[in-house]
Length: 422
Image 1 (cartoon, rainbow, N blue to C red):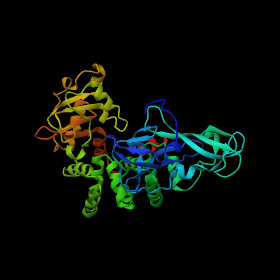
Image 2: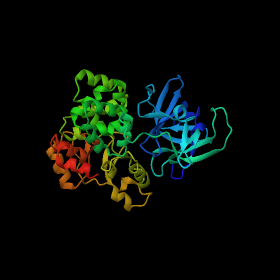
Image 3: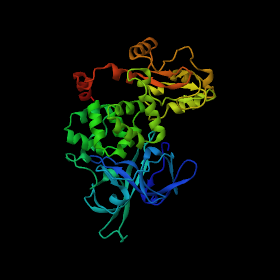
Image 4: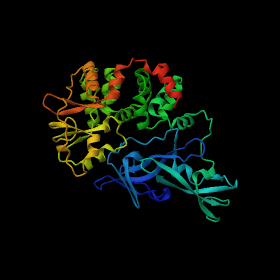
C-alpha cells in the first residue's frame, strides 16, 4: 500500500474474509497481533490471526499481506498452516487492547478504549497502531454513554512497556531498532538462558536475520531450543545458503527431520546447496538472485530491484536467462548492472543490455579463486553457472567476507567499537 494509505480501524477487520491472489478464500480475520514498544512509541503490527476453513487459527505476517481493503484482506498466497501460538512479546489487538481503561496524558482522565486504528508507514511495508478511539466516562463496555474522541497513541498511557522491565518482552522492544548484526552481537553476550528467551520471543523473520549473523555455536544452541516446527519455519525465512550452513552443523538425523518439516521447494534449494563443498562458489551462493527473461523491460527490472527484502549486493544487478525463471534456470545470457538500468528508457528490453563478456563462476570454483574474481572485476555479486549453461545462483561479497574472516571476528575490538559507535 502506497504512502498516504487510509487509516483502518481494527473493529472493521474482525471476521473479514482473507483471499489469496487468485481470489480463493483462505479464511477470516480472527485478530491482529502487535508488539508494544518502550515509552509512548506506537506499537508495530506484526500480522493477523486468520481462522482457516478447518477452524485452525494460523498467523499471517504483515509482510505476506498485499492489500487491506473494505471487506477483504489479500495475501501473497503463502500461508504457514502451523497453529498460532502467542509469544511473550505479542499482544492480541482485539482480545487484549480493546475495552481497556487507559489515561489521557493531557488531563489525567481515565477513558475506555473502544477501537484502535492501523496505518501503513510511507514507503515501507511496516504497519503501526497510531490512533486510539476512546470514550470518556465510567461504566462497562456495553454502556455507550459519554463523549467519544480519537487521539494519537502517544496521547494515552496504560499500554506501553516499562523502560526497565526485565522480561524478554521489554528486552526485545529495547532491541527493536538494532540492525541484525548488532542485535546478534548483543545476544551473543547475554547469558545462555537470556539468549534463548530473547531469541524465542523474536518473530521468525527477525530471528532468521539474527541467526545469519551469529557464530555457529550460538546458531546451533538457539535452533536446538526451538520447537521443531518453528525451527523449520525459521530456516525457511533464512537465506538458503545460510540455512544450508547451519543445517550442516547438525547431526544427520536432526538435519533430515528439519528438512522434512520445511516446505518442499525451500528444502530443495537448501539440499542443492548442501551438495557443494562449503568453500566453493556453489557452497557460497544464494539460490534467490533476481532472474529475468530477455523480453522483460528495464521498468520490470527496476521494480524487482526495489524489493525491500533484497540485500544491496543482490539488488546491484539482474541476471537474464531463458525460462524457467527460478534457479536452476534455462540458458544464462548475461548480467545487467543497476547503473545500466538507470541509464536506459523504461521500455528497453533487458535482453538488449546484457553484459555477456564477464565469464561466470562455476559451482566448484574454490574460495581463493572466487575472491580473486571479485577483486579483479570490482564486483559485489557474481553469477554461478553450471556446465549446461544454467544459472544456479549468485555469490555475494558478504558471503565471501564471512568465509575469509577468522571464525572469532565478531569478538574483535573493531566489531565492538563499531557497535558502540552506532
